[in-house]
Length: 455
Image (cartoon, rainbow, N blue to C red; front, side, top):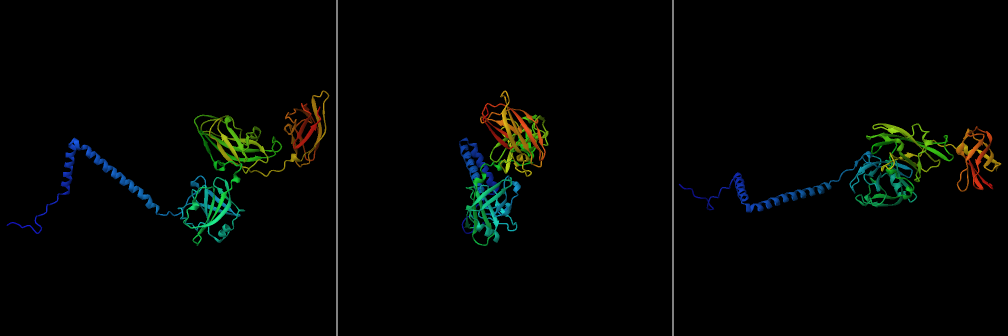
């Protein structure tokens, strides 16, 4: 018996199995590759497939950022120690606000109302962006600001920036214009208000506050080691020294204690250290041996072997009214060394009492030449009305012509130094070499006397 086909005519062919299909494909590929004339076509085909795969992977990668950008990050507090320079305190109208650095997404500043502190947008270092809680007191304060108000911002390196109020406006919470870093300044934003608009106050950086100042942002700090090649230098302390022996009238000694460690492989010569002190007007002062010898540590000299640290004192003679509020101690390990350590040292010290030598009363009674006209003799008297003993020595007495010639002090009666107790009076005689001039100025401590008609 034969079987009749069903409706549709013939029986459909059975499809080949996957294994037989792959086998047939490999056979065709092998036959094609065995023909040298058809190999270039296969190479071009393989290259096209590889390029298509690479382009697909690039397209997938480019889609990922746009998807993640749709997720708004929540503000997170960032530790101030994680960056080199951050604002720490905002001072405004006799009030101070401690600052938390935060990361925020532009236009999505979700203020942490539980902190009770101001917030600084991490990374805004040209136009500092700071948010304040929207309390009634803060709202009233920002609305009352005027051109007469100065705003200051303390930085983590000890520097204080000054700003002047420039205006206020209301912006939408999604505004990104306030994040602009195109101008030096400060932007204060009121955070947490229930209204649909945020109060924003802007302030311009007070350029005049920086006139004559060194850049504190580049200065090291006391007790902070600074590496200079094979040398590690650390300033330990700094202070003023008033009314000490050897300090000229109108001057003071400024003492800096520091440690130098040889971290290199060769000995270093401490006698070659290059050290200066700079004040706020950029005036520089050289190391004074007289001042340095009054310090608790040795004057820099001698060899420092590898791995050894030595502590020294550098003293400087500066005006008693030297400009501040900070000075800069500058160190290089040797002449011509390109790098230097610059450390901010405070212009503070014990409150100076008036120099008792400024109260001394001096009178000149005679001025004449000796018999052979080779010597000028000056006679006078001195009185000490102070309650402290006055010590006078050669540096406290000088005779100078208008042309700058100095007279040599040959002798004094009584011999120097003079020690005048409280309330003591004393007469004196000074013997100077004759000067090539008809006039001269005699200086004794703070007193000056014009001598004329000298022939």
